[in-house]
Length: 79
Image (cartoon, rainbow, N blue to C red; front, side, top):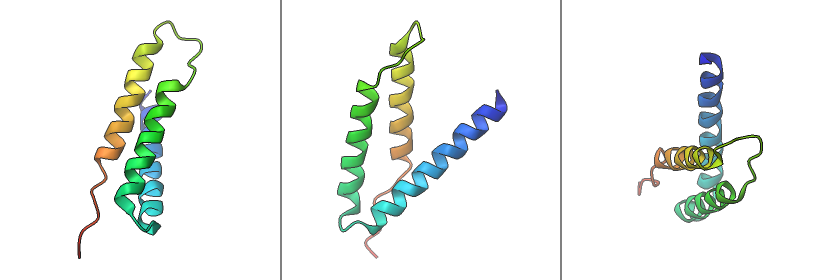
């Protein structure tokens, strides 16, 4: 289980870095991040989860993970 958690954390770090990289190349990085976050939240709300008794709990955890990932990103500095 620890190995799985470690891999999940590594994936989250990788995804966060990729999103930040694309946002930095955008003309309006903050708007890009906001739009992207909203799209990801919509996907999490609408994705079909099969094979689980309590899909609401899985969906809630996925939404919390998305919120956590985006809360780690700060707006660009004005320098």
